[in-house]
Amino acid sequence: MNIFRRGISTTIQLQKRNVFTRSFSSQQQYPSSNRFFIGGALVASAVTGGGLYYYFNNTEKFFPKQSSTGTLGLEPVEKDTVVVFVLGGPGSGKGTQCSKIVKDYGFVHLSAGDLLREERQRQNSPVGELINTIIKEGQIVPMEITISLLHTAMKKSGGKRFLIDGFPRALDQGLKFEEEVCKSKYVLYFDCPEEEMLKRLLNRGKTSGRVDDNIESIKKRFVTFKETSYPVVEYYAKQGLVGQVSCKKPVDSVYADVKKHIDAVISK
Picture 1 (cartoon, rainbow, N blue to C red):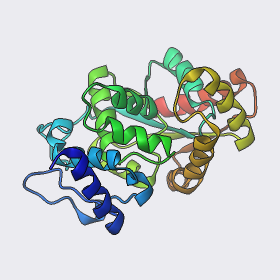
Picture 2: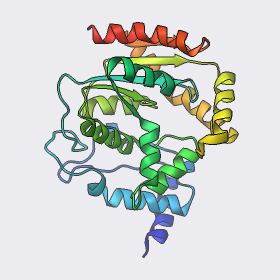
Picture 3: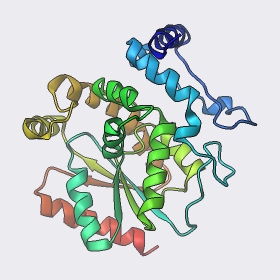
Picture 4: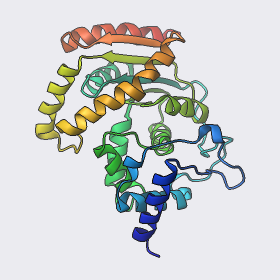
């Protein structure tokens, strides 16, 4: 049976169960409390099902075995690593502000979205088609993929201060990242009205070439952010770890507010 036919079978099975689980250790079953769920919409096509089949049956290619106690087998980062999650709706200006922080403070800027887009374009990627389909739907890529890509980029950079832009997009992603990689020291949240974000994204879509810079995908992304990403902000806010910045002001004025939060983070 070829991968396309197996993809059909995978799609049908997952749509019926509306859940998939996978052990990322050959000796230990992946804990049921950490199983992740995505709807049948994410596996609507046989192509996507084929990607899922290949992904779940070739995880050793994507998550190489290393010396670690985590369920994903990721090599530990340095103990003094500083991670700041950068959150905000699509088009809120996260990337622009991150570039300024990198210049002034020497942080390494990692965009979860950019890493996923690079992976889906990588030749012979076992999860490229799956990532592409999910992004088009404005939905969330399975956290194991995103966390692995972020961890790899962190290790390759050689840095110790990181801005992780556009992640976590759901609370379970944040908790899993902290379990597998390291704790987040702070969350920088960019608050921007939807009408402003929509205007920015449509304007960007004229030249970006991104599959998700269109009105249908943008609206889906807004819904996803409200329903799954904003609860992340609320969770960390209860711990006193969120710095909220309004994006209604000019870029330089926004950055003046951002600097106050970053100064507080690195002074701790």
